Length: 473
View 1 (cartoon, rainbow, N blue to C red):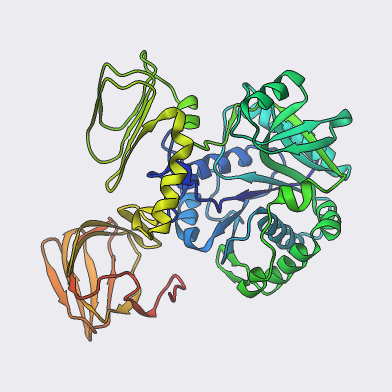
View 2 (view 1 turned 30 degrees about the horizontal axis):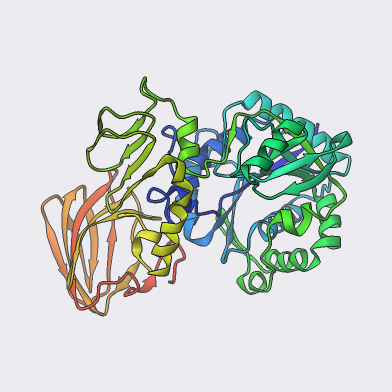
């Protein structure tokens, strides 16, 4: 039986699911179909593979703590299991991410025949039995020296996916970019074209041999980034200078389109990459009028629409084939058929450097989260939640004063040279320039209201003196 090492790539941003998905809280961390995030669903899926080792998850630096929190919530992975989270200090596409994972596994396991199973973190698959059978078939081919890609049996002439052309003995003849509809119809009729899922299987030795031929700069750069990397508990951080020198290429371009060792395992997995709101609509259960409603939604004379309410009640009248998504700081309205164009809005937000591109109103931190309730020139109001046993960094601000009022729980506060224990309806004032720290010594979440007053209220006005999470930014 093959020893299988799952590697989950969780570094994407999923901008086409804006306003729900943001740069700092991307698609794989969202609960889109049930109470489990796409990342958690992927972890559960790989934990059901016979012979699988504990997963390795590759994420960007900004998502490290919320990723760890979501992993630790799962019963499938107890805190004693030896899973690892590999941190990319900068994004360099999938070829460097996979190469880094290969080098990391190679240093832990001298068995060059361990099969690496590489999966995106943000895809859905409804047919787990078929998935496990496809993985077993792929592992067998990987042990024969092939690099296996998974092809999804197409259900329609889809223009939003790339395609794989399959030849005799499963060999990959070509990779096709996202086609026009007429071309997609030709692929469907031909019967030997499959959707490109972005999933792979291979042994360490085969991958290294092929990358040495076709992507030696990537392989060597990531070998150095891993060799010079640092361990921090569950986290292993690739060294930034070597990653900066690494070419930024997709695994398809760097390797799969060039190697003669590529084969495809095709299967019907009930697969979707949830690449747009329309793709999500297609996989969700609908009411008798073809509507998908999530949250507090009221409808009148509305058909075949997706309406999602996060914070407010949303009422819709006379809509057909429409998309409405409400969050605390943004509302998206569009025809479902044009949901791919949401990325154009995201590009405008990014160009204008608006916070709605990066952040939700609620921002997650390793100690808990905060929500911005109001912001105006010279003042800002936040609701802060600190998890039991957690504490913020010992810090100071140059430009703002802060008032803290405890709403629930207990707060252990360092304020200058004083230490205070505050309970519900008690408060403290922290002048600019004072070193201060907030800690939850209790067993229930601490909630407080923070009022900031000052000439500058940006999150970069923080000088950290001590931090249990290793942050220095």
